[in-house]
Length: 290
Image (tube, rainbow, N blue to C red; front, side):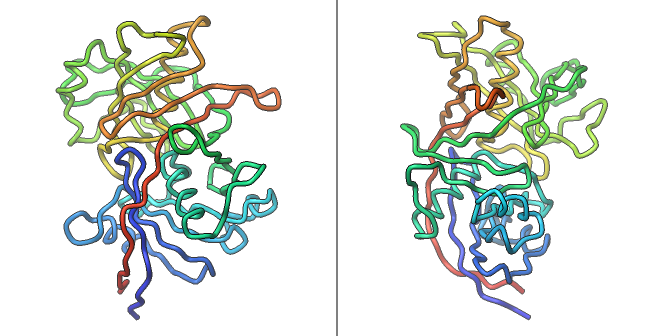
């Protein structure tokens, strides 16, 4: 049975999403629905879907509801697969909640439930800043094959609630000629796949205490995107690890869709990584789901 639902199109540095409000938790949004909505020729077009649902109304949101996060970001990749987290998506999700009157910023950060735990969002000079939480660098290199870089390169595996493999390239020419129309091949292949980030450090790497890198990314379940929030954080963390203990805790990351900020701080004795950048709502409308 067909159902007409409202939607809003939004993006964070070109990483774009179809936002579907489901405030009562009644919408059966299937993988086929997601794939059609995200199709850039036959649908609205987007790198993924942000379903807006109360934490209490989704099985994955029980812990978020208990932690005081009223809203849960049910994020799906463009191919319909479920993903744990999306750093750009969280900022766009927060923008939608505030603009729709579903939440507001007060003395405390805005809590948003995700499959990678509760994330907190605050306003920032760049737009919004989200605390992505703790991260983990997994031991051992992953060998990465990609079109345009010749021999396979070693990559660093970083877990930010979702999996990443970061590969360093020697110069901007190689970054620009990299062909990401094909899926990079990883060996060993992570059980649930991974987002793959290719980075080039700036010259000089650090200026006025801020590190700077450029990045392109292939997102699992999507393909190359103009930006990936958790991928930006993973790239900064990897370059900081490679640079050594004197490396800065503040980073500027340039992606095809714009510029994002990353900083590393200690929260309750644990190292967290924070991502800041813009979040834009483009237009709203209605769509019929068959």
